[in-house]
Image (cartoon, rainbow, N blue to C red; front, top):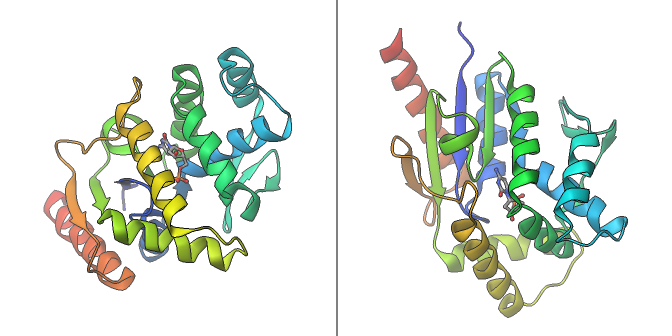
Length: 222
Ligand code: DC
């Protein structure tokens, strides 16, 4: 079978990573979490006390990182970054550095290299529009703001953080604003992406629908 590329984009909290991981497993494809790459850079910027507006230094830092794919996710310079990059303070800084054109250029290049010639499911904000414009299937996942805040709240609680719903809501709105209004590759639905509103859907329903779409599309391409 020829390698297939599935691009899943959408705003924070739409359920992209949960869904993308399961779709990849069912298709026997690699899962690439592009958000984790922006988070890894953000985490390092925080830890190394780099000024988040110092684009030159951050571009340099991003260039120096080696990302690799493993069965349990993405590794940075051989290390697994897991809970530490999911914290709210990292989300905020990742969102800020993702507006820097030079940083995006470096990470997009690394994302394309990781995808290579194999079958992949890649999720992010600009995968269908920019990173993999020729992906076989493009999905734009969304959900109501209330649902997205609720999902994020439960996700953080599971990780031991105790955010207030009010502050989370403000944070999600701020990140939506950054994602949609940045100058370079802003979040928007690709013209050929299928829109899926997951507000009233279970994870299983969303995954089944995407798998079905892949079968129909690939069947038609044979
Ligand atoms: O999907 P996420 O919340 O883990 O992404 C972290 C941040 O990175 C988020 O603020 C948006 C940004 N991002 C991006 O600009 N482009 C991508 N392809 C993926 C994430």
